[in-house]
Image (tube, rainbow over all chains, first blue to last red; front, side, top):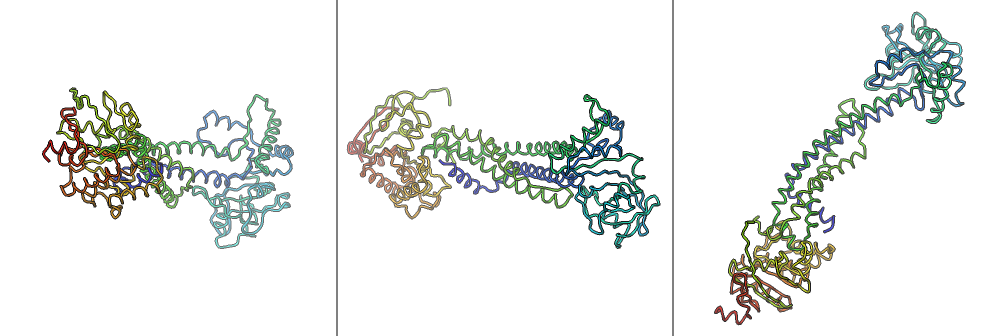
Length: 414
Length: 221
């Protein structure tokens, strides 16, 4: 008997016993539902972390040279923290040698920031993240303005008291007003708003539009860092290879300036989006493990249920098996018949589970901040797992059926 | 199952030629079911040989026996043994399914076989929508669909009233006339008397082996 005929036969059998078939595969359906839902949500979060979050926080192909990591990676030891604390800070005087070592086409900018009290004539004073930056910062971040303009080269060179503010800052200090040309005061020094940055959106409910940017040489610099010190130097290569090259150049310059012996580790940080993703990848590992382990319990229970129902089916259909054998069915034919029936049943259950899992993931995505992305491979995995569970569960009942003696089987009352 | 060994057959020497129409008769416990199982390749003897159509069947494995049953033997049972959920056509197709025939060819031959037993208008009916005689005719069509060397009937009229029994016997008669080898197991002498040769078993041995006329004379039929 061909495979397709076996499937058709199995389908007939399932069709006449819809309710029973439904209960039989419930375990598999639930297992696959959760498998798909978890994989979709983890996949969605993953995509979100990798493309969106990290892309927003760290520009593509860029890294930052800083004294210690900005993104805390889960389980740093106390010793590690202490070492970070002892590191020297990045100096303004480090910038020209590092910049000189970079290949043409590599963009760089300094970056220093602090939370400062900002005031305006139109809103209550508020603590705001204020940063000073140099020429190529907006180009690296690919950030434009929705109103006004960016900081000009002359303003960078002169250290003009001008600021570009984030959308939330604009909304707070200049409600229903055009902020361009108006004034904010920080530590009693007035700054002119020349632009409002394009809306950056939010990650995990945290707005990315609460910032204020001024030229590095502006008076603001005094308040964001001690004299002669910067937080970081942001460097962007033209591509990933260019970035790696720039990292090595920066590393070489910094190690030379700090007189590090080859045996000593770096006492500064070259932080890429990889470092930020490292934490996420660790978390994702646990989530995926949980997402596999829990449905597995469901699938094992599902397999046992299917095995039991198939054993019942074999004993209910003993006479049918006897008749088939008397007509020339070999052991293999009977084995196939029941294996295919079990696998078809289970695969159908898994297919329903895939559909439910996708629906479940979409519902969660719609009702919560968790994103969901249905991975195509997970659909194949789900259906494949279903077929596998069905086959494993079918082995024992099917081999019992195959070994039945046709004479005894046909004698059975139905 | 139990510890007791029962010798159902104790040395039977029986040759059935092609085109013969033979009835095997005997009271219950005479060993006729065991003989029928051996002839039908459903069972193999513990000792002795069984040759069917040039093949030594008595030492074959289960799967080889299945092949032989499929090719050489068409069964007709007392209880019809049709698959209840399948249509008459599908029931008749079954032996061809296990012979590995293509779907179109199967359908064509199954329809032909059903037409031969005058059931061409009942092909899409399930067994429970057919009368006893019709069911047995479906079973006969199924038995013949793969052109077996032997039609083997086990109490073919056991579940039928006498009018229907006569009808089935006429079908057998016609088959025998066309050269089909028919072996029929029964305990009813008047049914056995339809065959052209009657073998009577008693206690696992052949007690008589007569022509129809001699058998009829002996039983006063």
